[in-house]
Length: 92
Image (cartoon, rainbow, N blue to C red; front, side, top):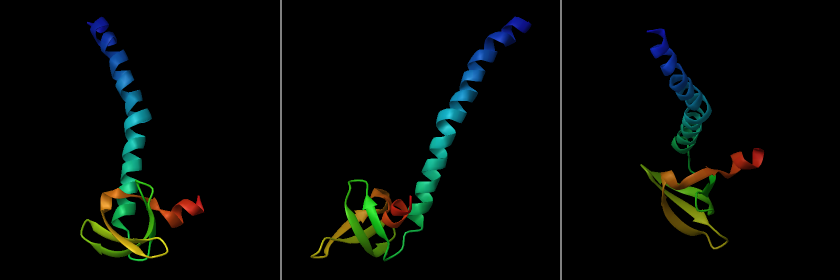
């Protein structure tokens, strides 16, 4: 009977290690990004996941309008497309 439990010990151990090395850190990173996107406000300077640098001029639900370039061209993007805050990345 004890040998049956010993055979399960290794796969369970691998699952626990996999959880702490891969899954948990990814969940923390996703939570941090989600909080950053929920705390965006007009005037924040951002970088999109596509690499566009701009300043937020309007936020409506999940749509953000950003202003880019010297001629102040306006783009409308989805909130999920925000990669990070420019101010935050400069501090690091």
